Image (tube, rainbow over all chains, first blue to last red; front, side, top):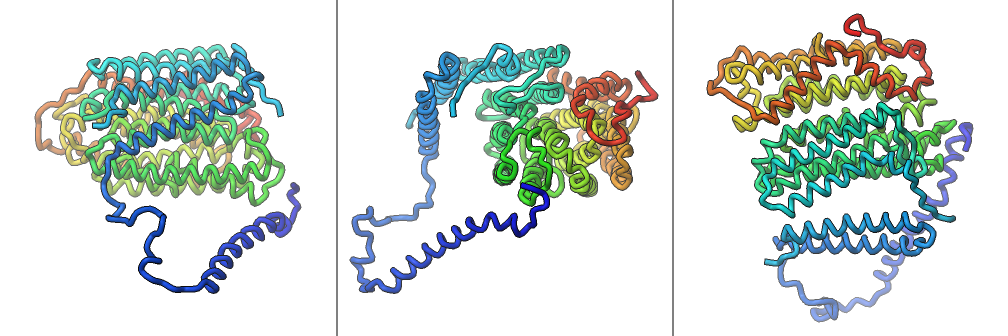
Length: 127
Length: 498
């Protein structure tokens, strides 16, 4: 990369990305458009109802519901991520040796503390 | 590509302050849930004890000159990083002491408050050591997470919730800008470490990338035009959190700004001086003019904080070693004066449950000590000799004179006059107006410690600044090769004191 490079040449290097974005957009629009134009249309009540796609909605989804769901979901995500971190660690374990083992024990130790915290504070109780 | 993890004992030593604080915040949190009947004040003193240990460790690093880099230069320990860590830990100690009374008012999660303050302090300590754009991103987010929760801590208070939401949305937006800027800079240079980025030419991607990074850090320090979250967030947040937010993150962000501008972008100085001069003039003028109209003391200090950031940006705009020294010194003076002023606001707020400036009427009759301390802190913020703020402003203006930034100095001087007005309005209310309720006010021992520390710092730095000047000069020695006529005479020799 040199300072004397003209701006157009500089931006030109991004042309393939712009082209790709254009093709991606066009693909989506054209596919939807064609299927809309060529599809046969026979609307009737049974056909417009959700078929094998879950039950009929019976009320608005925007209603207050217990915040506990979030707490459980959040705890689940945190421990999920812990497991994800364990995978690469296990793969390179033979290369990083004792230091790696201690590091991971510290990491899991912190998680354990957070778990005990959530437990003691009653976040796992459903009352 | 092979991956190896090697950490020797000497490497771990560099991380010792952070490791100590990590262990300590785990201890504080464990004590909180393991002993539910322990008075929460004890947790505050336990936190302060841990921070004092970290502070002693950092002072040892500074005196022994321990330094080095870790993790492929992502994490650096040098005199500059140690200075900012001492700044952050010192601020945290005073903020925790100032919180003890306030935390009693919380209905929930009293113990976690101290844990979150310690966690934010830990994040900011890492920020002071960030030497690489990735570690800048991670540490900045780490330090801000704690603040998101702390700002919205008053769960039943609408203003606190609004403050938290505003801070969160704009903080996340700034994080997006930061990540985008980093990706552009990395795309252009293929490097992440500050000292490697120093590119020979300014390509458009590099310019836009660094502008975005500057914008994100501008949000963090609250420089105009990135200040919009400051007034409402400072107003709604619990007052000790406001005090913490107005000082410690600014210091940590300036550590990153100094490294970015003085190391990565040193070659492009003529280009960024204009940017910083503009941000500085806007921040000073906007902050000071809007502060005049404020009726709430927290909002007044919020706008005065924006103006003070404008003053500090003068040092960055100077772009010399002396400018760096002046930033560090100014931050010290700002720490004592601003934290002191907020300590008075916390103390008065605890006693009369109001932050309106009207309610400071006749404070001198109710508590001469509080009124006198507030007078000293406000005059120091305004820059009146012989207080710390005067030396700070003098230092920063001298750094700018050496670089010939006369417009900036003229605007700065006019702004000192404007700021004098609104600081003195508060003083007038405290000393001349009649109190509506003349009952005397008394403050608790921990609060007294904070106010005395603020007074001591403000007076000491104002009357005998030489030790602190020597310290900041030593902290920025690595910038002594920066171009500029000031390089020949980098230290400020004062006619008074040393």
